[in-house]
Amino acid sequence: MINYDYFEYQAKIIRTKFVSNKAYLTKRFICKLGYTPNFCSPESFNEKVTARMIFERSPLFTKFADKCAVRKLVSAKVGDAYFVPLIGIYKCIDEIDFNQLPNQFVLKCTHDSGSAMVCLDKSTFNIEKATAKIKNHLKMNMYFRKREWHYKDICPKVLVEQYVELYVDPASQLTITTCRVRCFEGRPEYLEIDVQDDQGNDYSNIYDTQWALQPFRVDLKDNSPLTLATPKQLQDIIKLSEKLCLAYGYSRVDFLLSQDHVYFSEITLTPNAGRMVITPVEWDFKLGSLWLSY
Image (cartoon, rainbow, N blue to C red; front, side):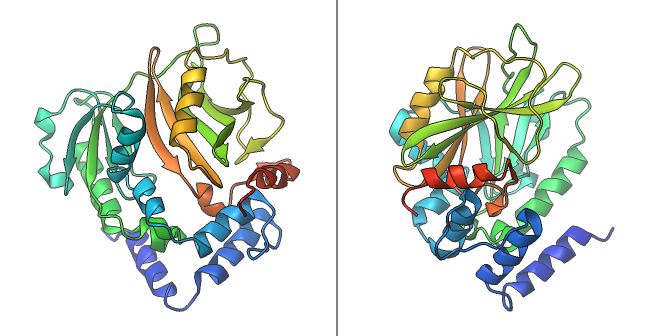
C-alpha cells in the first residue's frame, strides 16, 4: 500500500532546502489566522510563538520537547510522584512484547505530537494497526512537518505508559481529558480544560486560576453546556505549574487528572505551531501582552 503521508513528508523535507522557516511560517500564518504578522516586533500571542520558532535556539527547548528527557527535568524539580507509571522505553515498536503488557496501556513516541494510542482492552486492540502507525511516526521528524526546530534533534523512541482512569466530575459527569496551564513570565494565568460528556461530546473551557470561566476560546472549541465544578486538585495543579514552567516568556504545562491524583503530561512551548485560532481575536493580543520578554 502506498503511504501518501510519507511522500508528502519527503516533499516537506525537500521544501526546507528552498523555502526559509520565516517565509514558510509567514504564509501558513496568514492562511490560518487571516492577518499579516510582524515577527521582528511581535505583539499577538501567535506572532510571539512563531517568532520563537524562527529566532530562538535553546537546547533546553529540545529537552522539554523530548518526552523521555523531560522526565529528568521534571524529576529534578518536583520528584517522581507526578509521573504516569512507565512500563517501558523502546528503540522501536518491534521490541515490545504485547503479550507482556497489561490489559490497558498507552503507546506514544518521544519525539513528536499526535502519535499516542490508547489501549482500553487488549483483546480488541489492533496491534497491527498500532505497529504501523508508530513505525510511520518514528520515520518522521516534527521539524520538517511544522518547522518546530526544537523537535529536530530528538532521538525517536517509543514509550509505553500505564493507562490512567481520568477524573470525572461527580455532579456533571464530565470527564476531564486534559488540563493545560498557560503560564507567562513564570506565572500560571489560564487553565484550558478539555472535557467529554457522557455522550462522548468534546468541549473545552478556559478558566483563570480562581476557576472563573473566561470569555475566549481556542481552536473554535465550544464551552461545555454543563458547569464543571472546581476539581479538588486545582491548587496542586497551579503549584506544580509554577515550579515547572519557564521563568520567562510563555510555556504551557499539561496534566492528566485522576480522581485522586495529578499526573504530569508535557511542557509545550510552541502550541499549534503559532497558528492557534483565538476568538475573539483581541484575545490573541491580550495573551500576547502577558508575554513581556518579547
